[in-house]
Amino acid sequence: MTTISKELSASLQARYGHSPDVLDALNPTIETMLQHRSVRAYTSQPVPANTAELLVAAAQSASTSSNMQTWSVIAVTDPGRKDRLAKIANNQEFVRTCPLFLVWVTDLARLKALGNDRQKPHESLNYLEMLLVGAIDSALASQNAAVAAESMNLGMVYIGAIRNDPIAVAKELNLPPMSFATFGMCIGYAEPSLTTAVKPRLPQSAILHKDTYDSQAYKAGVESYNQTMDTFYAKQKMTPLGPWDLHTLNRVRGPEAMGGRHTLMETLRSMGFEIR
Amino acid sequence: MTTISKELSASLQARYGHSPDVLDALNPTIETMLQHRSVRAYTSQPVPANTAELLVAAAQSASTSSNMQTWSVIAVTDPGRKDRLAKIANNQEFVRTCPLFLVWVTDLARLKALGNDRQKPHESLNYLEMLLVGAIDSALASQNAAVAAESMNLGMVYIGAIRNDPIAVAKELNLPPMSFATFGMCIGYAEPSLTTAVKPRLPQSAILHKDTYDSQAYKAGVESYNQTMDTFYAKQKMTPLGPWDLHTLNRVRGPEAMGGRHTLMETLRSMGFEIR
Image 1 (tube, rainbow over the protein chains, first blue to last red):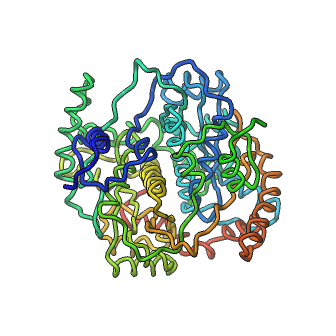
Image 2 (image 1 turned 45 degrees about the vertical axis):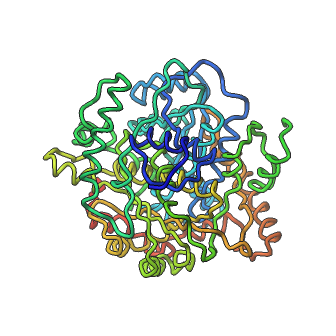
């Protein structure tokens, strides 16, 4: 084990419950990332003017497959619209109360419209590959915005639950066919009385493989992570939802636990994605 | 237009060919992102020991859907393996020459194995939703690693071309069923004589929508971007591939232009993803 700075060691302890053997090259950017926690309670303070534009400049600076830029983002600030989106997204209160709600869109509609305008074929848009490209492009962009927001001392949380009803979201946001709201993101100032601790993750031994995938590596990793999470919940005086493995398996037990998302294939097909 | 610092204005000029009206809250993290450029030529200098571990600590600090952590990453340093992966990925030389090649994996195999171990149902893994969750989780994680690498003055580039032959990649990396290599990432020190300029992106008017999607916004945006890219290619003394719109439409013209990725649906199904 190399000797690492106190700051890096403390951040790694919070993230893993132990300190893995990493290069000691901590800087403000990496520190911002290691300190990430999801914020689910916001003050009423608005975000500064043109915050969305700065976050989008960061987002557009992320890589995008073949520079195709197959994503868009909607900055929602209208209270009525946030309220209706909150209802779709499991009625999560912070979607309603965050001052800025960003909806990240897998957008093949722009290239389709361009293809029609220029009378050029654009058949590839109908394949699973291009749906993945759009979702991945959205995610690379959104993650830059997330880190940029946190570097400005704003809080954020991703909202996957807007995939519970993609058609209702599309209607609310006026999305054209061949685009869909991949996930949302709340942005605002964290309510200080309700800030949460950094959440531990699986040990690196379960995630990072060297040269080839080790199919047995997860076993010890998950055992140790169950214990790390138990300790975390006890320290946070939170009721654990059971050990991580069983709790997570319960989440993926079947379609009845998917909040409607088991129909995503048919839904996206009805929204213009052929997904061949 | 608000007055912004010279540094921010210069970064925005490089990214857009003009300076959009953004909040002036530049900091080292946002500056790192705005300065991103893909690096396609590396020196022979190895990366410091435990670089992968630090990048993975940043990656694991990204959000992950319901803390399910449905991704893995393989750090490939073996020259023979990098060479074989380069051959799969359009024979891109920098996959061979970069000192560290990270392969980001959509990993539902870990939860499947856990489900089998614990004798718990895990039916949701068979749906399109969970394939998307894994791909998005991989992308959020990888983008943190990308920004972390750049904050350490390392260069990087994403390699989507490893999706040209997912079965060959899985064989090379020993990936179990229900996992697949979503994309690769070269990491190393940029060859200074071959560094490239920051690539412009579509104007914000084409990407960022306010409260609802504006289906006409792309039109003026694309016209102006075609010109921005013409100017960029001329300044870089690069041969433009035609205006951005036509060049991009040519990329998505049909399955014959997809490098084999038009079969991704069948391929992933043969690799254990049902994608219902």
